[in-house]
Picture 1 (cartoon, rainbow, N blue to C red):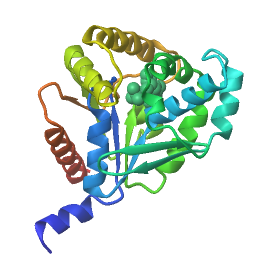
Picture 2: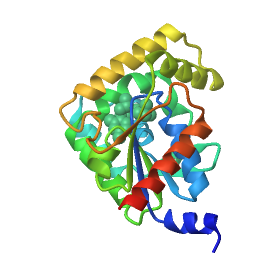
Picture 3: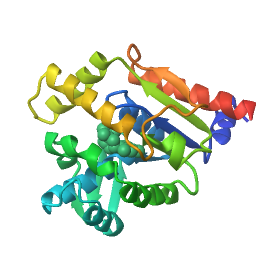
Length: 235
Ligand code: DC
């Protein structure tokens, strides 16, 4: 058996959980990591964004927990993941671009703060990770969704780097913004996501912190595979 075969066997059916603030590099890292390992990619933020998109479209207020719960319980959220894009569908409609608009971004923290909304989403997320072979990313995947993940990583980066990454993503999608706007938006969401009562964004005590400020995506993917391999060897 070759060394690479041994490694790939060892890495089969594992759960990798990545948390961190917006712009820390979670999404791209998780998507490429999943492609490299042949795993499924679970973008939990996209689920909250899809829900927010439907709520806004149906004029449901982000403060209306009762109506939001109804949408959360009945929505059919699906992903179609490729190495370069994670397509998102809700109730059969593709919303890959729509869930990244400033309007959705502005309201998603409030929508995702409701306990009943989180419970509905977390139940689905656990179900999706039931058989392993998954890379999940978000704000509570290391603490609430997959507390027994094989490797838990908290990705972080400086606010300037995170805002620059967000700005680039928006520019690629043809949405105009400025660095200052992105810094303000990230600060606002960091504060909201970290201070909310239910499943706030926190570092799990046993999560490994990786600062991605000066790392390329490839380095981030390699680092997480290295950490996973080390965790498995130590177990
Ligand atoms: O990672 P993102 O920017 O796409 O996440 C959008 C929002 O969703 C974020 O402001 C907080 C919320 N979120 C959450 O509350 N829990 C998660 N597991 C993932 C995202």
